[in-house]
Structure formats: structure tokens, C-alpha cells
Image 1 (cartoon, rainbow, N blue to C red):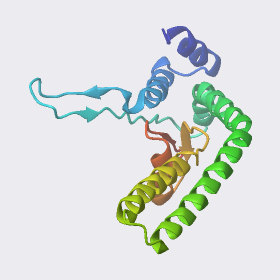
Image 2: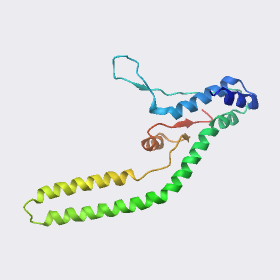
Image 3: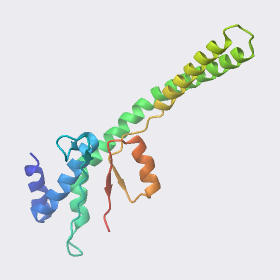
Length: 178
């Protein structure tokens, strides 16, 4: 399926087909990410998520960066589309976040009201109100969405960890120079 695309890039860049193929398979692997698992033992629940690592080695001045950029172009387009979708939905998310915050504040006031009341079933009401507050806070955290990312460049280990929290399928780490 990828052969026409990979062959076109290799021909235009005047590089061996294998250079482009290795990069293209790595990009496709990053899109599959954690959705596919390998179960090494047939009767066991142990699994591994397949990771692809690739590197092209060519003499200096052979224009490796344009090859990498050509293969990453579809991934770049996906990232741009994700950013546009996120920007369009961010206004709605902002309103949802404000509503969630108002509900949380109201739930906190309700807990305070119940806590100082002398009702005979105060403990039960307090427990229910706390449960409602926890659910509202979980919903509020879920509304803090960010644009889907597909690739990152030269990030620190700490930043990669942060980004992987919101991109659970995984990310493609691109390094032009090793």
C-alpha cells in the first residue's frame, strides 16, 4: 500500500528505496502506537507494545533532512488538522469548563451548608455531597483537553513524560541529528 508513495519520494530525492521505506514504516508504526499489542506467550496475558526505532545513516551532505521531512509530511498535516479542530472546539470547551467550575463551587458551598447543619442524616448527606463533588472534579479534569500530538522534536525527558500523559497512544520522537 505504501510502495507508490515511498517509491515516489525515493525517486524524487534520488536516494535508495530502503531509506524512505524504513522512515515510512516508523511513521506508520507511530500512528498505530499502543493500539496493537504483541502477545509473546500464547497462553499468557503478558503483552508488549511494539515500538519501532529507525535511523538512516548517509554521508554528510546527502540531504537526509529533506527525506525525513518528505516522509513526515502526512504526519505534519495530521498535526495541523488536529490543531485546527482543537482551536474550533476550544471555545465550547471554555464554556464547558466555566460551567463545570460553577458546579464545583456550588457543590463546595453545599458541603459547607451540610457540615454546619444539625440534620439527623447529616453524615449521609455529607457523604453524598462529597461523592458528587468528586464526580464534578473528575468531569472538570476531563474537560482540560489539548490538541492531539503525533510527533515531537528534541524534548527533555520530563516534557516527553508530560506529553505522553495526554497522548496515550504514543508519540513519534524525531531527531535530525544523533
